[in-house]
Length: 157
Image (cartoon, rainbow, N blue to C red; front, top):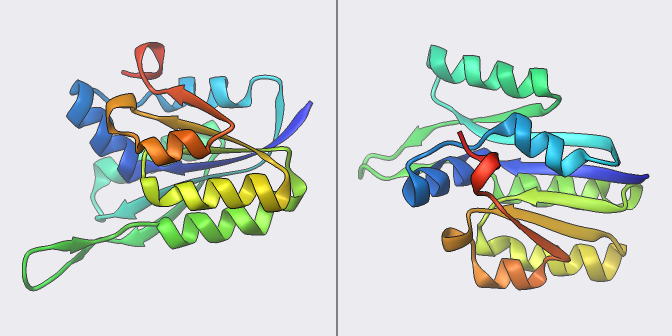
């Protein structure tokens, strides 16, 4: 049985699934698929906290599934742009926990993680399984993964 680390970029999945399909990710199905035959060492879901009740309910659902939810406040800049990505936090957690696992499951389509996937495979000897929305997942990330799993079909609500 493989030891697995799950890292879920909630914002990326939300926007890519909404844009590509007009649907949402089924996090129960994602958990079931990603953990089948594996022992979960740690599982993190990274999200932006806008402080509304619907979001809190969603975060509690993620916790009930088994994720440790990490939150960052939503920051609206004076120019109207927003800040709130977890790229550095996801990368730090991946490197911090890589030595204790056989596979890192990364749910994101963000091409910035291609370098992380390459590093995890090369320097830590772990498999990197990437879950992403196919038309909106960076080609570099798919190529850097040991395995790419498309978020479609039964992985959507």
